[in-house]
Length: 217
Image (cartoon, rainbow, N blue to C red; front, side):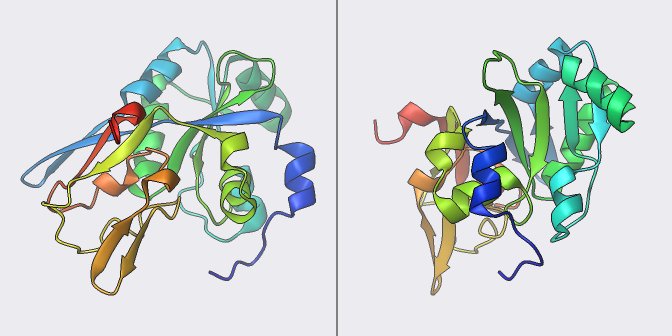
């Protein structure tokens, strides 16, 4: 994929790598007929524990310009939120407004990640990330920084007996854990971050999100 702009290794190492970790926030989808129910329970817990939530346009997508819709999926919490409101003109929003924004970005195919800065014990930034603009996903995919940046307790589990090799999940996967080889779907679990994006368009419910230690046990 040819991008308009991308982060340099030097910029990523100076400003991001080593200063933060990103916890992938998984989502679970249950499908009954045409009804799709989004359960973002972990994300909701983080948001409801925050005293202040602020919303801004996505810095990465605004700077890189490789994709742009939706732009309102970047949230800051508590002290970071107060700083963003005062210094950057961020909008203070409610938990319900924040969850609505996260649902919108999930449907658009973005990964929800909670960033924890070095020396902090709770996330203060939640972003809706894409591989073509986000500094963290760009670092992981282009330069092999996954072990330095990402942490996830969840992983996708693939039931090959249900999979019909339609490939609907391939484009949804930001981590390139899924690809088509001729007419067969190949899943590489070691690349999976357990975000749950692949669930949304799976017509046979062949994918579930499970605790990471369950794979291979």
